[in-house]
Image (cartoon, rainbow, N blue to C red; front, side, top):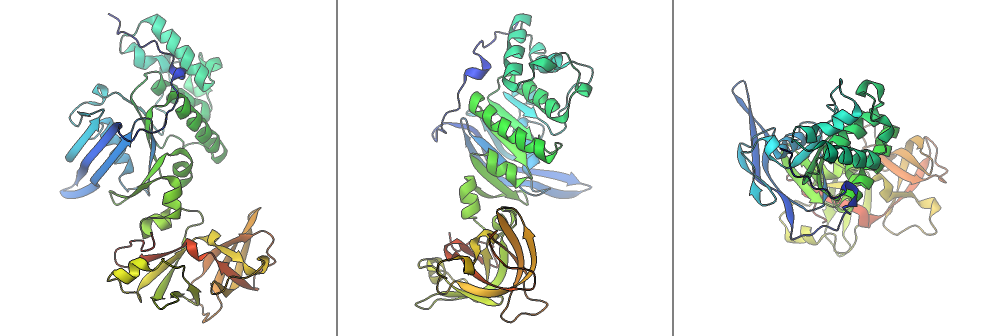
Length: 399
């Protein structure tokens, strides 16, 4: 007997704004421990996360941070050692993957090589006993949406990497699940095709509007695809925020160093909390914005043992400014110049107290700079964009 089909066109569901009161997926104190020859390896460590209907959430972090294990736990491919996976209000922690209303897209596409595109996409409905008419209708809708109707009779070996990825997406979409899971689906594509597929995934999410959880180690994917970014390290969530907040107001030293390309520059630093607060770093000194030191004044942090963080784009060649900001400039020696089109990346060393051990850092300045390797440059700093970190906890003391 055929399973009753939802005849709503797959491409008719528009993406809506996130409803903060309607949680689609909850991870409640998820812990996952693996046994490695008698040694316990904690892959996921007390992860708490609420994801709302229609959100596109990206889990990002370095290899081994726990992001893929978290995704596999949501899918039911791993059983949590502790905690609960709750989908639409139901605890599914003990359910098999097939019992959960989720669809997963893998890194290696996982297509059946002997089946055509049509057969690959239709397969999830066939094993659920949908009628042939319903299957044909959905295959037509799905392939039209993904722009692969002309490929229906081809086999995977006859497709490019991008086409195979669209087929894998189609096989997930045709099920019309409540939740989409993506495990680094673009990592096997070349750089140009990855950018194209990111755009297509954004458009697809806008059309389908389903809750999606996406795993990647690529921060560009995380920042361009997500409604919220979940940054992970050592099995723990480091920060959950919009891409803009994660970039501009990183919660700690790890997030600040992981998000951003080129990465944030870090310097050993000491802060003076006089009437005009200043920060002295490796070879330069800067005035601080009013209010930036409020946390320092009320905490027990050793202000002589801090770490200063400045993103490369917070620097500018002071000679290109109408007037150099008082207390926000210092001289540096240019070691290397990398032209990058609209800007130049400079590898520089602060000139004051310069030695071979002086910290070398990156300043991203306007392309109009006249600086060349070996020159001395006067760098200006947007001090409202600097960050101070506790060297013990890594906490960002300026957010």
